[in-house]
Length: 176
Ligand SMILES: CC(C)(COP(=O)(O)OP(=O)(O)OC[C@H]1O[C@@H](n2cnc3c(N)ncnc32)[C@H](O)[C@@H]1OP(=O)(O)O)[C@@H](O)C(=O)NCCC(=O)NCCS
Image (cartoon, rainbow, N blue to C red; front, side, top):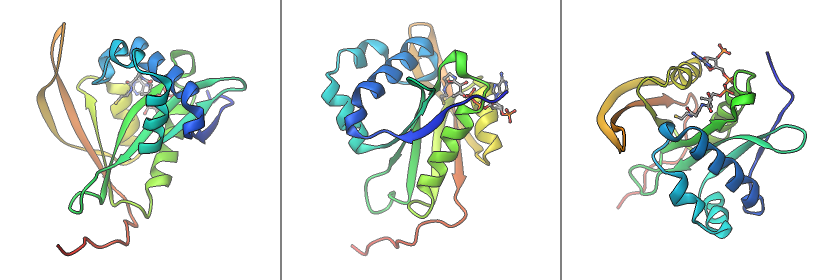
C-alpha cells in the first residue's frame, strides 16, 4: 500500500517540525537510536535549527503535518569527507509500510550523489525492517559492533552498513 505524502528538505526555519518528528522518533522507537528523548526534549528549538544547518534532513509530510524524517551528515576532515552517514531515520507507525521510508532514503541518496562517494549507517541488530529497506537500496553489511550501545536493558549490537555511490564525488583529497 502506498500513501499520499510529499518529501521535502527541512531548513532551519522548519525547526519546530523537525523537533516534533525527532522527539516522536525518540519517544516511539527508543531502541532504534543512540540518543534519548529526555536529552533532546530539554534542548531549545534553536538547537534543532542548528542541527538543520549542519545536516541535510528530509521530512515526509502528509497533507497537514510531518510524519517521517531522515538525515545525512557529511564527515568532516580531508581524509573522510568523501563519506556521509545516515541518521535519525524514522516514520510514524501509522505511516510505516506505505513507502515513506523508501522515499526518504531515495531522497538522501539523490542528495548525496556527486557530493560524496560512500554512505554509511548503523542499525541495531535485529531491526529487520530497517535492514531490509537499506538492503533494498544496495547497502551491504560490513560488520557488527558488539556492545555498541549500553541501555538500561543491557548492551545492544549494531550492524554497520555502507553503500558505494555509482558516480562518486569529483573532488580529490587536498594535499597537505
Ligand atoms: C525503518 C522505517 C523508517 C521504515 O519506514 P517505512 O515507511 O515503513 O518504509 P517503507 O514502507 O518505505 O519500506 C518498506 C520496506 O522496508 C522493509 N520492511 C518494512 N517492514 C518490514 C518488516 N516488518 N519486515 C521486513 N522488512 C520490512 C521492506 O524492505 C520494505 O520494502 P518493500 O515494501 O519493497 O518490501 C520504519 O520502520 C521506522 O520508523 N522504524 C522505527 C525506527 C527505526 O527503526 N529506524 C531505523 C533506524 S536505523
